[in-house]
Length: 448
Ligand code: PHE
Image 1 (cartoon, protein in one colour):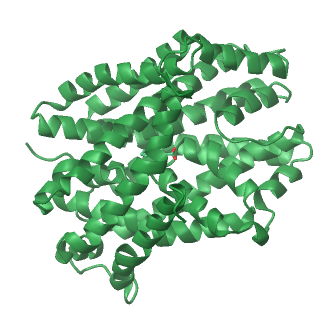
Image 2 (image 1 turned 90 degrees about the horizontal axis):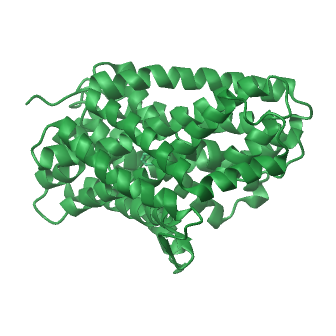
């Protein structure tokens, strides 16, 4: 069976961009930037993305495109040792992340519905907060919407790599950018006192930059660029030989940071304009924003396009997660893609529901006071992704034959845009990236 590919450069870019742009850009980055020195954080973020994260992305790209296989088998084909376990860890991480990501995808659908039906109209901020809390606590709604979100993702996966994933991202990514631009223009030009929000995001405070900030920036950049769990590797297995991988990776990184900044510019001027305390995470999107839309002219329309934006960002990431597991299941079990996707639909329905119900007031699936949703989130972003990322760069830098890395990153020696360019990338992969990821991990487990 011939291996599926993305058909065009634009489609390749859109698909990879669809994976990286997600909730990380919208609900975490702007807040982290505001809290950690504004413009100063932005600089640190860009530097670590370039020096620490980009090498991981390029390693995943090189492994995936050279082997044209799923995350686990790609490692197996290159090395007979236990390295396939790194791929397996990636598949497991993708499964786990997708299980809670689909729940948030579902929330955004419910909020889209509420906006369309104008259900926020006339509600006070207490009522909006109460609405969100009781929705989550009830459990039935979140499960139902998570299933719908999963169902949509499964349909795209079944439609295929080019006709499903590539095509959908080619439509969704430009739409998402257009919506975001409208939201930013509205926030900056039409809301009173928007300058306070812009200041929060950009005030350059270099005194806030500490070792800890550096590590926070690495963690955020990792999550935001979908690294360390096989998503980039799996998508790379569909990238054509003619594409220049470093070029694609660099552009995706810039795009991802731009969307994160624009999200901040859409959200924080509005937050400050209404004198609300900035926060991060679900509260920002599902409590603060509806509250604000409620108070501004054209709020219903803005609320609709805002939740459409959140949903599109979430579903395109969700699809890339699902694809990691689908590619693995269909290739390893030697079954058709649609059968693998359907099988996953059933198992993931269960794990997704567990995540959704763990937040309900039924008190199910809570371990030591931590919901399954939080445990999955915490374990994957703090442990599985950094460990996966670290092992991936070590594999690409020391275990994989160097000719593979060289031919993948230079298109067989034909593309070298800058002098020493390949040497620099290889140096980053072998030395810089592993050291910084290790530091981040050691800090997390409390050793340094
Ligand atoms: N990068 C996505 C975001 O910013 C999350 C994600 C992580 C998606 C890992 C795929 C794989 O939200």
